[in-house]
Length: 143
Ligand SMILES: Cc1cc2nc3c(=O)[nH]c(=O)nc-3n(C[C@H](O)[C@H](O)[C@H](O)COP(=O)(O)O)c2cc1C
Image 1: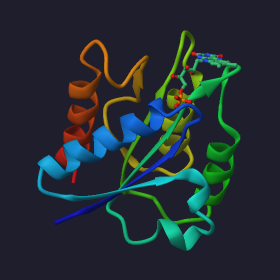
Image 2 (image 1 turned 135 degrees about the vertical axis):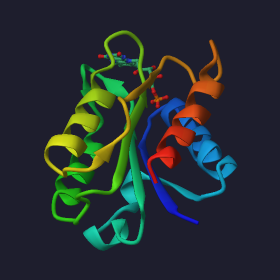
Image 3 (image 1 turned 120 degrees about the vertical axis):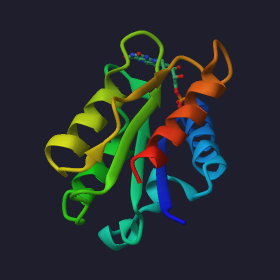
């Protein structure tokens, strides 16, 4: 059984919910998933021991949330090369955060990324539950 870590930055709760649904998809596939808020990651070692890491942030004012920027600088020093990765986030209209997180994991951390970032306007409408769970299954498909 592989282990996945999902870290989210969320103000109003939608990105947190998406992260929890991604975790459900991972568990449905028979693997272990831990979901934690971004400020609970204090040091590089907190990212150790996972086969897959999935980072998510909501978009505010055209950008990812500050806590996710801090995490990405910290994660640069962790050895994530080759690990399975994904990025996600809730957004309203422009949704810059998920793509930027995804691109950083791909280009800087050299992770083995899934097909693309998951961007949802809502975790509960328009097939959002299914899409988020499917993203979790896509993560496990690369393990
Ligand atoms: C003050 C404010 C600024 C926002 N700026 C953006 C933005 O630049 N682009 C965008 O796509 N959505 C923007 N949004 C919408 C949020 O991304 C959206 O509400 C999202 O669901 C919030 O996720 P969260 O519940 O995880 O915090 C903004 C929302 C607020 C309240």
